[in-house]
Image 1: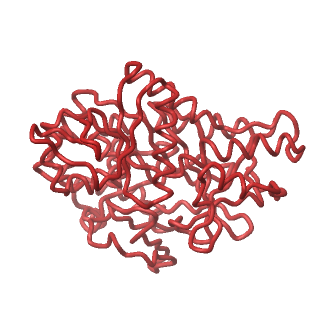
Image 2: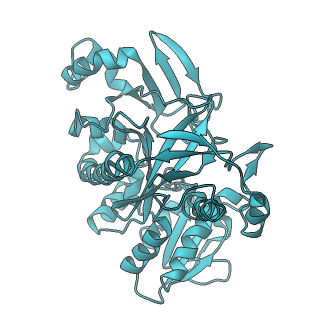
Length: 404
């Protein structure tokens, strides 16, 4: 794994405008950055990222089965009690999943380490699936990259296949996101594009325009009943919304399904460690509420905590169970905070303690590898990098390629 300086395509900004990639720059800073790219070997992709991500997703599904059967774990993940039956029913009924994104710390040499699972509403899909693939094709045509150079990117094709597997041809799907957010709309449109290619109807409606009919069905802004809804609106918010009371009787299938609320929650991390302690792609993780007792040698986590004590002492991260874009995350080493997010929007939530896996540093930037799951298999990667140790909302997206 290397970071390689490459010439930018002369007219990439014109192309971005043509295809509606309006958030290539955000807040006066570049978001898409092709002044360099990350190079991988095929073994690094297949053995270190693709296979582990697919395996981890299987372990996450095992964790869901464990959590839905445990009121204690539902409490730990702060799942609202009145909606626990909704989540359990979603899992028991086999409500289908479409996609998710693991975030890995990976340096090209050591095993990739899971930082978190964006299993419900991951963004950066368009730039991962489409814009970086166009970058590869253009750079191959220009001779910037040698013939035979590839990219781990079967995302669009996998999404088309997944929609075709789950839904009968001609089925109508609705897609929604918060109005006025170009990045969110880019993700929703990438999903809708795949659905249409799979022979399905794909209708978009702003989130705030969705209503409830007299019969209790969700309807769009043209009063059409919504039977299937892909919502770029996180379950942790939706379950606390007044509309949540209408979900169970609405007859609407949600994508991602309600059981994904258990995987997008960082309480998943200590559950995974309890179930699969020592897995090479997992970091020791514990609920913060258990730490004082475990440090004193008491409680069910005492032995596991003692085994991980040296690694946690070397560095650990405190993360709210509900947090996005690095908000309210802090990194600790030797009793001191070495870095903390300035955004404290999620500070009121319970936290987990996870061993610190430093991101590799290239020219002052630290990349996180996003491994995309479609269905139950890894189908591609996207990289974001930041000067901070905590990857945040203005991190840059970087293309990647595989050497022949």
